Length: 485
Image (cartoon, rainbow, N blue to C red; front, side, top):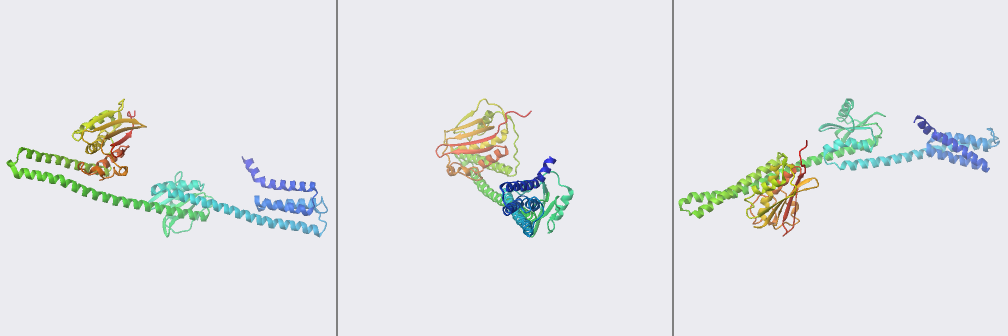
């Protein structure tokens, strides 16, 4: 490897010598004179300047001048010059070679700088595009050192942000000395600190406000590129933090709106059964023995039905509060899917009294891991919904099946169905379908509760429906047929 590296370093010099020798041999063999030879040698010197730099081109000029003198200026085959004309020729050749080498070298350096600027612009553009993909400030800060290391081919990058105070590195641990330097630099408006060949550091500025500091190794970035990188990083961090703050504010507003809607809905829904209960109770108390048995039975039934409705409303409110507080946790145990279907139908027997219930569990009915209590709550909401909308005497089917690593459950009815425009809204809180009028009372929370329960269980829920063709709710959990040993 060392010999190969040494040969690579010597290659330009060997190429200059070999090119001069070949040119001399060709010109001598073809019998060209001094004028043609001078032009060919000058062209060769300029070409070497464009390829290998001014030092190699000057070496090439000396070699070509020696060949020019020895083989083409009289007297030939000697290093003696015959007269002033020969001295002028060799002097002009050397001067022209030096000037041409200088001009070619300057053009070569300008081309290299232009290429370097183009590459820097492309890297800065790539950096900006990749940072735009992150709206989460924490994710952006943790990934940013690795992004910079990859795009700019660095050995290591460290990022310090002082609101909140955090350090992020692309690889390995952050040395205490660099940690202290970044912390100190982030609280000043100082110029960039550069240690050639080792580490460079620069504050991250957003206008006149210092938001942190950035360090990288080796200090290979130019001051202009480093300034542009730090400016882009500062803007990206400020943007991500602003988006995060706006999202938190919007979430607070949404939460407040939902709480207000929930209170308004519950206030209205709770007053209705309470009014009915109070009216029935007042009639029973004031009328006393004067009421006939049929009227007394009707009033007692009103009290019973409205009390049950009041209990259901309170239960849904409690469920929604548990979900919003994120206290719903799945406790999976080995259960038979058919048993879950049978228990769900049994617990909703009163709601399904006027429908034909069909249980279709896929065979073999192998036990699987799921939370029977949570899925039972989902079934309760879906079965009450199906019983409310499906015509009396119609069939409601409960299915279980295994598909693509999931255990799926379905509730199918022959109700009026829903328009495609309603399907994206059906699981939203307080949303009630267009066909809900005259189909019983409800708060519009049942399906929202079912979706939240399935998300807590690691699964999901969806619906397919078409007007006049009924509705099919499908929900699923990851299929684990036996507990891990």
